[in-house]
Image 1 (cartoon, rainbow, N blue to C red):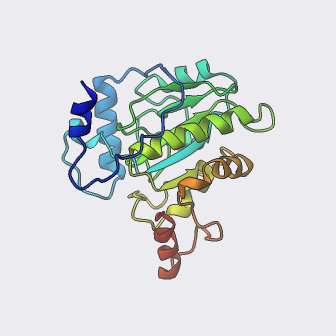
Image 2 (cartoon, protein in one colour):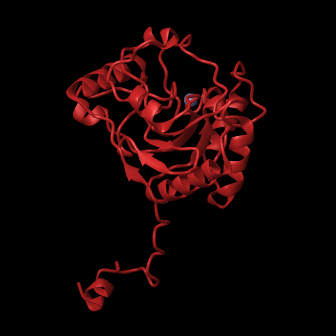
Length: 247
Ligand SMILES: [Zn+2]
């Protein structure tokens, strides 16, 4: 295509060309197998947990427009072990999750201790990684976590690069750590039918969230209201959660 043709494609009304998208950071595609079984189990999970109506067609219901990003740690030692854990369609072990559905957990991205990034699942597919937010949230897993294998500065930088690239491509307006997800209860983004299906999560640590947020502060992504307790249900507090979604 010639430069002349490119110029002619600029829509009428835009005096200036749009700025280029922030690039995605370097990453390797290492996709989890997405089988018919995974489709079926994802649909069943969404039917059991979402409060919005669904079509019943996995080819529609298991796709999403990303609106949020949830950061995690694997608590495991290697990227390979995390990939192997996420690969089967069906959950094994994890008795605290089995009652809520047979769909395995997973993530869209896996960030190793050295900051190298693997894409496990396309951005627009629903993955089970955070109660209440799976239908709108991209999940980023970081290898390690906790005292034994702390997350690294390279992972902070890699997560920030991913967030920057994703926020340029999708209408993402909130960034949350898994440890904070219950603060979004009451937000229009949060959908979970079972009020007793909740977990308490430490990942990826408050310190890690502070560092990543500092690295992407210019994006103006919303954060859960830190002072809001998970048991508060007053309308004012609910509005706080709603407002936190706005840039
Ligand atoms: Zn997590």
